[in-house]
Image (cartoon, rainbow, N blue to C red; front, side, top):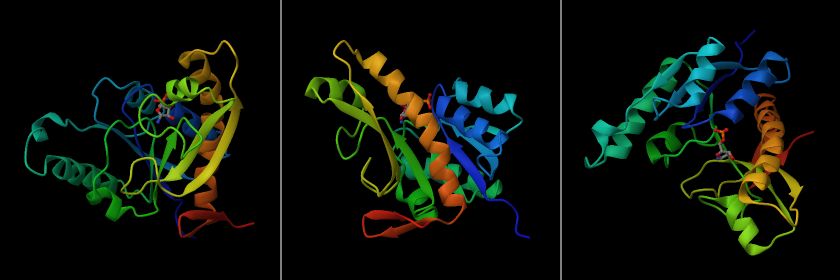
Length: 208
Ligand code: GRF
């Protein structure tokens, strides 16, 4: 019997989505192995969460690459080497605050997901919840999508909507969206593990 699919998580901060993935895995809702957590921030809480669950954690310092020609690609070569070493089959970006280069995109084409706190294609980029409030939308939400060259534009896998309330601040809205992020990210990964995601153009079809 082939081994379980191995997930690598890239995270820069708090790591609550990582925690949701870990919890789903430990509860048997996500039938894959967590192979490694990599961060570009030494003090990322995500790394601490990994350690607490005996998942290998790796800090890769971007500083030596800053300002170098092709520094971002060279950094991603290092990330790729770690992913390969841990035999990662699918990569989950979870609050990863770097733009991934073709080095990683080529190696993990349609094998790399991201979660974004808006109903894409609305409000890509930073501060999505603030953008949603500024636009006065009534419905906000989150999106899990495959990662492609264009930031926050890859084929959409799952989305969840949440209502916007009259007195919402970016923080209260973010908290309501986060609950849904934690629900759909492990589900999207399990769909991938089950081989149920088919890319058709820019669409993802979920096979029953
Ligand atoms: C989440 O809102 C996610 O959608 C966005 O960055 C945030 C990461 O939060 N990409 P956490 O580190 O998973 O808690």
